[in-house]
Image (cartoon, rainbow, N blue to C red; front, side, top):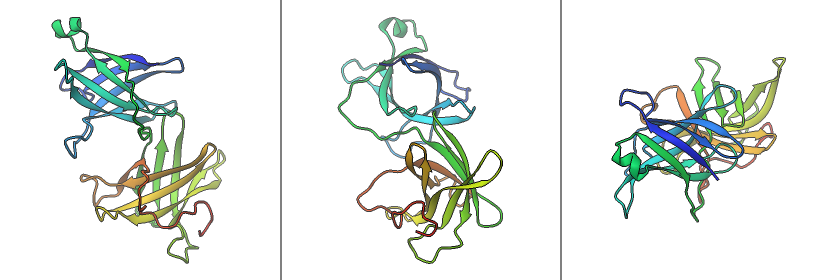
Length: 242
């Protein structure tokens, strides 16, 4: 079960709402930050928190909603802190509405639906030289800085374009995955598909550019979504050239 509180902030604040969410396993401070809506049903907010490394990560999304029966406004949130996705609503009591309070109570939402995890955050930045990228990927349970180094052994179209490397505590490069340059079948936009091996298994993410980023050097890392016709060429992961 989950509980928590949420408070609307001043219109000039960086975050539209701030609060806490609690369970028997964690107490996490969260913020709701306004995001650009791409469609009517796109989320209104990103839910963010700070992980153990001090990195701010996106742990979910939120929508401004209105109750069908009551007509009262509330917030619907989809959150994942690395333990699996869950849904909660932030609602106001009758007393809070009458007092015109900015305080909301977070309550669990029971749903039969299955949702994708929204816990992954990260960035990928093209370097000025060497055809390389620097980036990070993080959630509430891990935080990984890495480099994309051009795969000099690529001889087939399906071979990775890059190897993903991290540094050991003493600075030694360690290969942890592969990356491919790809093009979306739907939009025609270029993106980077990454397969990263972690102690908990393979992590698949995409690095994409939104309208503001397009044409620049920075990509946002988002969770990989399965589709009937995946864009990423090949399915092999950690082999040097395949």
